[in-house]
Length: 189
Image (cartoon, rainbow, N blue to C red; front, side, top):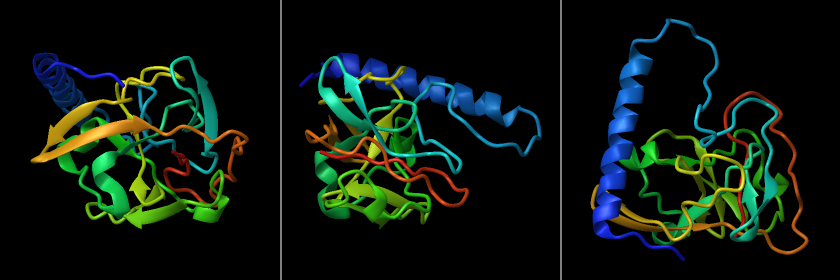
């Protein structure tokens, strides 16, 4: 488990907040196109009807659950029981794994997966054993696990994040959603 000093964490959060604000400013000045959205960093929710749950081999942790782009899925210790505390500023760094139209029964391993309604958007977020799942913006390429053991605080809520390791013999994919929508990828712990 990695830890970061409070000075390093403060600088990282400040730098990420600045980068996010700059990105929002650039996006606000962008074209009026109503086309689809994506993520330039490789982290964040997959979109469209082809999104599926998969597993991905990492050098640091072995096999983990990930989206089709290989983004590692994480859960916070403090969100057990479906309690969603990662909202607002937290979502600039931790992207919810959204269910789209994929049922929990269609997720890898089936048992233990479910969904919970997000209080901020009303969207269904994938859970494993009651813990909501996220991807991390600091994971820049498939197999990155920068969020493993990461600790941060948003709106008075302290979080400790863990990559969701796939059980031996876990299924490597789940059915794609049957309609548009975002998400459709999940994780296991």
